[in-house]
Image (cartoon, rainbow, N blue to C red):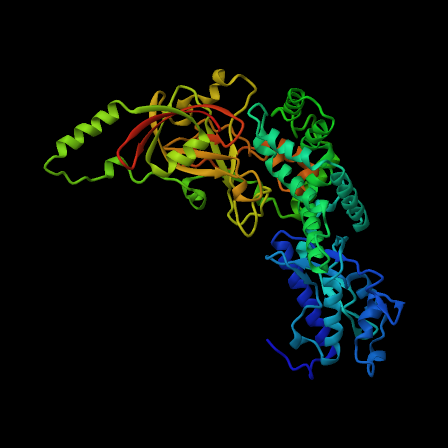
Length: 562
């Protein structure tokens, strides 16, 4: 809708400003972003060789003939405190909050002031995230003294960024986060880039335990270290701002890990490398840190105070429905599947020709004496899958079966770190682990997963398992087996700390204890189950029979990742 700028009243103008700002903030946060506050330099806030406030800068560009009519302490307070906010749109481009409203909604004598404010804020560096405290519905004053004033209507989602709360459920000051950002950059720059490169290599080492969980974290540190090595890049202010923005956004969006990365397993790994610790000792120490029964696991019952804190975060983020989980079905996985059999063999109809007996005889020979090969999963995925028509898994009496779990409610808020509003993926992987050696573990008996032991089971779908925010960062693939499903129904919710969204990190022990002691809401009869094949660092023992599109049949043993 457009308006005549000659007829817009001041009351309408401030209402348009407030509504536009609200819409920008709502959209940014709903898409997983944050509000940021920039800080113009003294050099930029200079008029006639005099340092001025942001408000005075704005006032200076209002038509001088009417400027005195808009001298206002309420607006001064608003602009100096809340007039320097930005958000990022879906294309990672800055948007100046409020001031970038439609030109048709701005009175003619304010347009130059708006243009200059946008110019000022687009060329100012981020100082900190803007943290809305005390659930304020409005920033500034809507009306005071009988006059309307510049203000921002705060959407409810802006009150929910509990990632900035401390353990006492108190929001940090923006200045504290600014200092944490500075400390992070200083610590990261102090690390030799080669140490991060070596850490990335060790994460993929075949002897490193649980390596699939840490690739994303090393990638983050490596990319940020590269930017910080030469943050200026060139003298173009736009490029310098973009690089600074990239570091800030990555820091805030991964705040739970990056703010204290030195005390994490990856931080410890890099520290051992920096100390020139022998590789054998590095691997041994890292494996001890990330042992599945220890890493990020609660060691004692959470205190009442922490439970209360967790309840507040769950309520704040509207995650009550997200705690309801069920077994996933094939229809839940359709958008992620990258391989399926061409058709059921019994459904194929082949037209017989004059010499069909010769063809049938050759097919029977291939089936009776299939070619036997051994390979890593990477080779299997690159060379076998593109040509595979059907795949059958040779199920022994005991196999490392896994289940897939998803949200009961399709509209539940994301609770997993890789599940995003713009690209939903509430799927997680779950299996049994009672601490006993695998081959004596009763929970993995094939008949308890609806599989007849010592038979061939059709692979009906293959999809990536996602443990990082981007689909391409998948570290393993899931082979869905026909009719495979857990019949023991002893699962918890599978909400492990390493999978949780960052806002839940301070109360991870509460969430995991609740997860371990809560049954799934629903076990579906058409639930899926299957096998996990890792891309890196894992030895395996899987036997498959593969029928290729040219009629060739091979028995393939997958004994390793690479």
